[in-house]
Image (cartoon, rainbow, N blue to C red; front, side, top):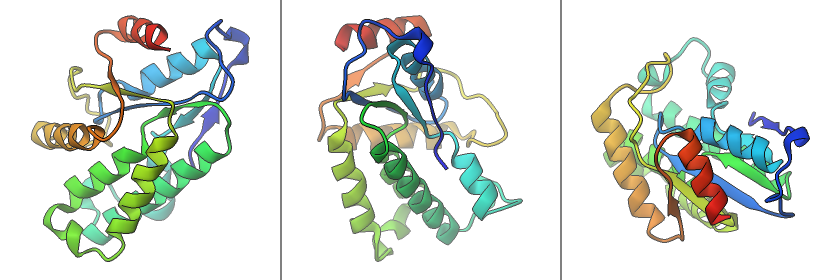
Length: 194
């Protein structure tokens, strides 16, 4: 389900063998835009997380995120995590639009108090967090871009901020870099760090 693309006509001098990095943040933080630009600039494969829409269409036709049951949300997060890991394992080098940690954060925020009653959550969390150790670099984007209604992502600002808080909490266990500003500023910051 996760799409991998690469434009090797635009390779940069920064292109390194076996580089794996991810761009993480809440929805509408600019992950997809920056991941695409990094992929083009560095000549790395792009593992896209925004195809979760396709997962929704395939497994929950006619439904939106807002009207999924808690069981369906749990299934969606499991499908999304396994598809992302599978796509990342197929590449020696990549930039990932989103991160396996996002799956834990969204499952936790969406399922709220029920999360600890789900039998497989601890194993799900272990898989996602241990996979995140495979990234050479984790770039975090704060929610500084206004929410855009694309008909798919939640428009609840409070929910978005709770996702951000949960993500920052889990990121404390990893080395990560905060990237901010417009797209060009962000690309320059990533280039400098790499």
